[in-house]
Length: 314
Image (tube, rainbow, N blue to C red; front, side):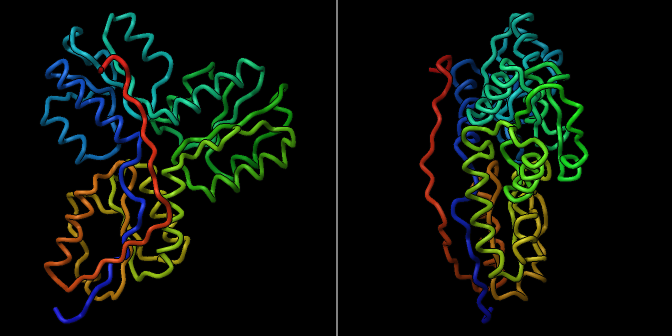
């Protein structure tokens, strides 16, 4: 236990305002209406959070037809939903609470506005991600085109659109990768309409910027988060790009690579926007059992964003 390991702890990390709000919505709904409360899709992409809410009486479903009792409330996840989902809920006379992150709602409104103003919308995002499915479901599929990579951007043919073009993005993308895609689009469509304020959210930006600064100082870098968390996976990519090749995602059920960790003198640690702080502290406690640890808080930004809860829960 003589050798000391320094853990450089990224700040900000963990829960963002949209995740805090979404979890609070489910908890408030359980308090106000009692159990069960249905939740369409994982409220946020973290198994630990979802399991905790299940214990309190939340029932997670993927589609509304799975609801066994239509008198019970249903919460829509933080990632947002296609327009067809609230329409179906109203048809079924379900009481629903929308926990969509307000920053995702901003992208939905931009998409609708561009469509209304006669633009073809290009969405930069990951195919199959719930947020992308939600954004694409705001307007007719013929008026929105999904691209994922710089290759996709290069392959778009100018003549395939006979109207002006605008772009929006998923909120949890890699800032650098997205910048490269946008540059290609701007060369191809010099008059392309951009978001007034960029769509990648403040929390994604802050967490990636912190990792960029810390990763080059470390022998290993760890991101606490779930495999299906887009923003957590991006943090691992950012750490590797910044120079720490031994960067990996750790979920709460995983065994830590302690043999490798205790050989290091300095490791970096952060958590995705849907991972609770308790998992970060558990990680540190586990390492402390095997070696002497010092913690350096590496602060790159201060966050004080909060979002109001829906009025129906007051």
